[in-house]
Length: 111
Image 1 (cartoon, one colour):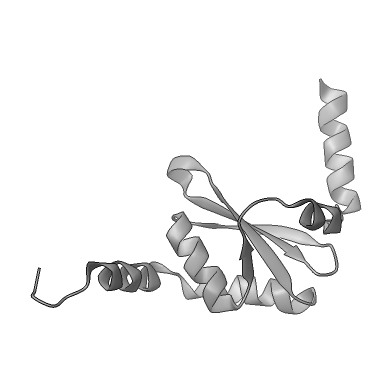
Image 2 (cartoon, rainbow, N blue to C red):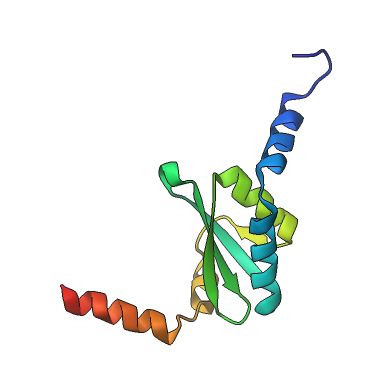
């Protein structure tokens, strides 16, 4: 490693380089369409990280990133606050769509 170089800075630059612009644009679009948003990032093993977005209006959706670092960088670049865990207030804000209720009912009836 070169003298005076910072390994932390190099790692941050690598994560920023790996963050797809399409992911950032999708997160920005969701937030703009729902009056703002918050995110919770969940590690999902080899698949990477799931970004669950909760809009101010109660709508929610998700995106996937290669890893949690990329997910956090994408949210930061999109201007979306990342929550550390599922807080009660955030969960109470979520409003499942009618389509989701129907799909959950089909799964329960199939058992």
